[in-house]
Amino acid sequence: MGFILDFTEPNVCVDENLRVDDSGLIVMQPWSVPRLVADVKCVSGGDGKMFPEIALPGRLMKDQKVRWRNDSPLAAMVIVRITRASKSWVTSNPNAIQFRDRYTYVIDPEDKTPTIPVTTGIHTSKCGSAIDVGTNASAEPLPGRHWMWTDLSCLDEWIGPVPPGDFLNLWYREYVWTPEPWSDNANKNAAQHEVYSGSTRIQFIAMPQQGELVTG
Image (cartoon, rainbow, N blue to C red; front, side, top):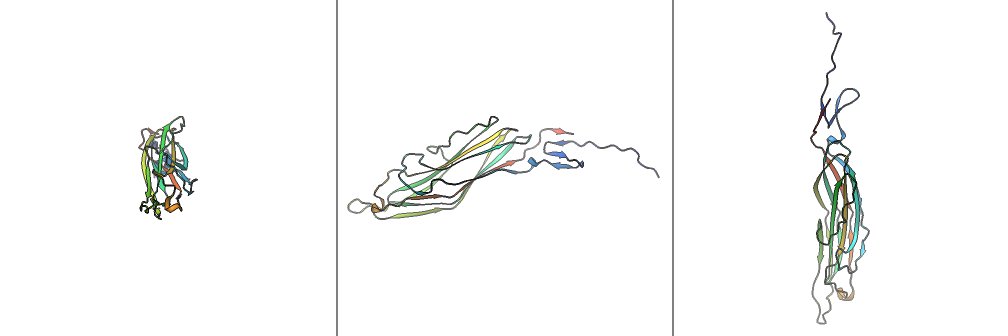
């Protein structure tokens, strides 16, 4: 019976999404699967009574920056997920209240700050309501209040590619304003205007890309 005295260790070729561990096994790199690389909760700092804000953008409710650097050797596509909790507000006859939000972003190796996300023109989302039940014979607004609630909402957007080592910086802002005309004697001089905006969750999900090189 013969014995094998010599053997040849095989060479294995792998791409950037694979590696060989200390025991010689082929394993996946951490960036080869979808990764949650940023998860930030943004809270409103402007809840409470609402006063006239007839000039856009209005009262600043939320202001949040999110940053991620691509730590893989491959370019990455990123899903930016914006999840907005419910909102509520009270409007008195004959006025209106509207929320607007927007985010801007920049991909750059120099870690640059995005432009300020002003909602005066372009905005990512908006919601609000108005009430107008008329006036009495003296042209005073009739008594009337409008209570409004909205469910949560979610937005996904693909951003990228983000090259290896580059930064993805995002800037999110939410405002609330009161479109003209604003009545100072709303609800027959018993005005009630309030705004409450639940938290906004901002997530970056880095998606794996196909390798470009073979090593080994």
